[in-house]
Every structure is written in C-alpha cells, then in structure tokens.
Length: 399
Image (cartoon, rainbow, N blue to C red; front, top):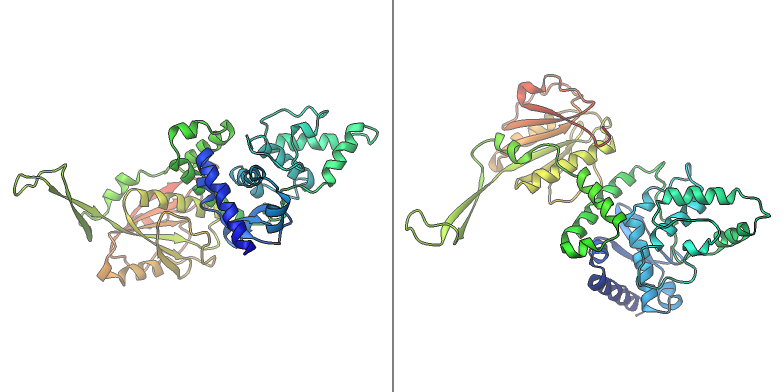
C-alpha cells in the first residue's frame, strides 16, 4: 500500500510541474522511476541501459514533510540529468566529494519557488567564499578546491568541512564513472533525445522562460544533431519505383477523374536497409554519429530496417526514431552478410541500402539487389567501394 502511495505522490509532483514548469515534466516522461532502498534519499543513474530516477520511499514520504520540498527534490534530480552531471563524474579527474557539492550548487540555483530540504547546499552556505551565481560545475569545483587548500586556522574552513560531512538530500552513488564506462556515450545520446523531445513538446512562450543555461545546452544539442547529409535529396538517388504506396483522400486536391473534392494523394514510401558496421574498429562516437544520421533518414520519410553487422548479421529491427542503447557485434568486418540478407528478402524488397562503416574489409563478393550508398567514417577507407555504389565521408562532431 505504501508503494502505491509513493507512486501517486511522485505522479502528483510531476503533474504539478507539468502545469508550472512543463519542460521538466515532459523530460521526466522518458525516465524510469525506481522506488528503492539502494539509495538513502533520491538519485539519478543507470540501471542497465535505462536512465532511472531512484527514490527512497521512507525519505520521500516521511522525511520530506511538504509537497513543495518533494517537487524540489524531483526537480533537483532532473536538473542533474539535464546538465549531464552524472556522465561527467570522473574520480581520476575530480575529488568526488567536492564535485558533488559543485554539481549541487549549479542545480540548486534553478529550483525556483520550490522549497529544498534544509540539508541542500546553496551559495549562501559559503558566505565567505565569493561564489558567483550561474557558473559551471567546473568553476565551482575549482573554487572549492582552493578553499580546501586553505589553512585549518581559517574559520571558513571548518564550516566547509562541516558541510562536506553532512548527508545531502541528493545521493550521487549511481553516477557513472566517465573515465571507465563506455555506456556513458549511450546515456548521453538518450539524454539528448529526451531533452529535445521535451523542448518540442512545450510552447515558444514556455521555452522562453527556461534558464539561459538550459537554452544554451539545448541549442548545442540541436547543432550537434543536425544532419550532415541532405537526406531528402539523397533518398531520391535510390530506385524510382517504391514498393510501398499510401493512398489517401484530401480536400486540398481535385479528383483528376471527376474534377470534384476530395481528390487522391499518393505518397510513396521508400524501404531502406541501413547497415551499421558494429565491428571493433568502430568507436562509440562513430556509432552515435551513425544513429544520428539514421534518425534523419527516418525523419525524411523512409521506412528503415537496421542491420547490425560485423563479420555476420547480429541483429535486424525496424527503426522507430530511438537510439537502441546497445549494439551487437564488436568482431571483424565482412560486407557480404548484409548483402546476402538483403538479397534473401526479394519478396519484401528494399529500395536501397545505406551502409555506415569505416570501409576496412575485403571487397564484397556478393552483388546487392539494390543500390548502395556507403557512408564512410572520416578516418576510414573508401577503397574500391565506389564500384558498387556512391561513397561519401562523414565527419565526427569533434572535427
């Protein structure tokens, strides 16, 4: 019965955010709730490949006495996700105790009208440290490092040590060690998707009310996610006869036969096989780049079947606009299994094949039954692939 109560209360908090601050509520719609004693308070982190909001039941219902403080804690954790603090936590680079406080200083300035628990750190917690508002987590971290190096005779130092040893309402034990965890790349892609999805669900007026820091981050994500290839034009290079057509009636068009409304609109959909090289020579940044471009192919109206392949076809599935979160393979590279798969599906023919790869494999022996468009990584090798299709190199975001 208690679990039902806490889920109802979390839902009530998110509904209130939907009314007052819809961006955060829409963002949370893609986050899994995990009611768990694994954390003493509240936290965000990964459970497998899924991003979770962890809530300790007793903490949320018993220690947080007011509705406002419950909303504040949920918003606090949401902001850690939006700023991707959990993906940037690197114990080889940071003193994690100081990094945790720096991250809390960033998000607690944006809580707004909601009342944080008394244990929350804020700029006023450090009155003698000259902490400026609206700075990055790195800025606050560097400032705190300097404070920690101060002489123990300094009165402010003891206040600082007291704050370090107090338990916060926000647990960071589920944050990802970015120095050793490759999965952070997948998590970042998913967070970007959820941020853009939330942005697209709110009005222009609601978007204008977001803090500038968050709007700047959204703009960076949008810039990063722009298509590198003009897919609307490129898709026209594939076969002119499409296997699927959709017919619908529309009042915007006259019937050619009768001269009356409604007329008929014929929309032709292309079915594209999109092969993704999942061999060990492809790094995670390139995998992210591949799926970013796949997203834009899908957005331009193509029906997509993804074929994950290294030395053999590992998995096939229809693309529905979402990064899969986990890829299969990481062995050698062979192009023939993809073309064998395509040729075996003549009853449900593909209009073309787009192959994302670094090109490092033997020239294919099997001739595909459709046109091929090779997308080669910037450090890849086109070789002689142009003999069986168009080739184009694509750059990573870092270049």
